[in-house]
Length: 359
Image 1 (cartoon, rainbow, N blue to C red):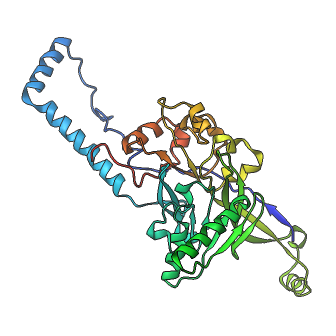
Image 2 (image 1 turned 120 degrees about the horizontal axis):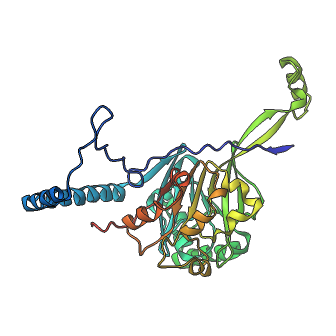
């Protein structure tokens, strides 16, 4: 069967995040009004003393603080992100826990500590074997058994499959329980069918231990060019005779990197990950307090590298994850505002589990 990859046009939508993109301030005067008259410096000084004495400035200050608090609380309460036709939820805090869930695809990327809403996902894609990404695997499988759900499919890098099997065997022994699971080793470049219109392929990432990302493709069939001139009955006759009359077209939908250095962006073979509708990637470090070299030494990406490589990001939307736990929501918002406008317009931060400096 011939397989052809067709590019997906990527015209980034302007995604408005009320935290990242506050509305512009109202104009000082409208077009049909005369501009304000010039006022002397002395008048300004006199007016300032008058305002300060009236307590007006303290009222404004309190209003600003209350608005910041309202925004921060709204961000803390947000439990999911609706983006490019997907409902993305979960938690990703550097060194603590990562589990990102897309219910429409019935899948979770990494399992973290197994949040409750991950239990009902049929597929889990493990990027690497650090505990904050795989710690909840036994609980995930056991809880599905408790709920009488079918055994899940867990896809892992081939180099860790044997150790993951040992992990399950230990829990079967010490807990004297059944843990029914379909554990699949899938290497970079291989393909696994999730359903008749979806497949997944791992792609290469760069962490301090073996790792890989995952790219989910949608599948559609298109009539081959050499048969496009035929009429319906002729096409039906060919089909009944066993001739393959269609090409399979794969369109990249969602790419998830897990923990990685920014090098994945520069690999030509990862081009599909950077043109998928949605890219979910990490930005562990955000500011000058930690250098790019520090991020690379620990196998992570610095926000400054995303700014540097922005030209390669052709996704319609990007979710940034895995921020260091040292950051508050306001720190994340402030850091992301430094992104180029075209990139910032399509970036959303996954901040569930992070605290506001106002709480």
